[in-house]
Amino acid sequence: MKMRKVSVVIGICMLVAFALTLLAQSIEQQLSPIMKDNAATMQSLRRNLDAKSAEAVATDAEKLQNNFTQAAGIFKANKVGDAAKAAKANVALAGDIMKAAKAGNLDAAAEPAGALQKSCKGCHDLHREQLPDKTYKFKP
Image (cartoon, rainbow, N blue to C red; front, side, top):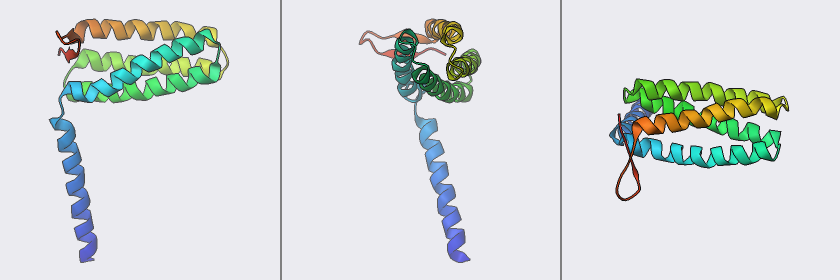
């Protein structure tokens, strides 16, 4: 029984350490890998829509849906409400793309894909500042 309590305490300590590590990261450090993956996935999505590859479009949409779900959580935790709202809307758009692609209707997937791309630009225009070294800084 004592060993079990020790294991539980160790587990809790590990979770707290992980949470503190995430909190210590800047919003740029949290978002950068997600946004870089989104950029590559959006390019892949466009190519796959052009190639009429429904399975690949569905895979790209699922990846975008997961990424925007993570981004929404980061924005919410950092109290950037409009960006969190946009990310949640993008989760829904990616879901629409995935649903259409799985049904084999790539024409229906094209509209939400275009809306998703416009949404990215709109949020970036509001919340992204390019630095002299060509990297980006998040603007709340």
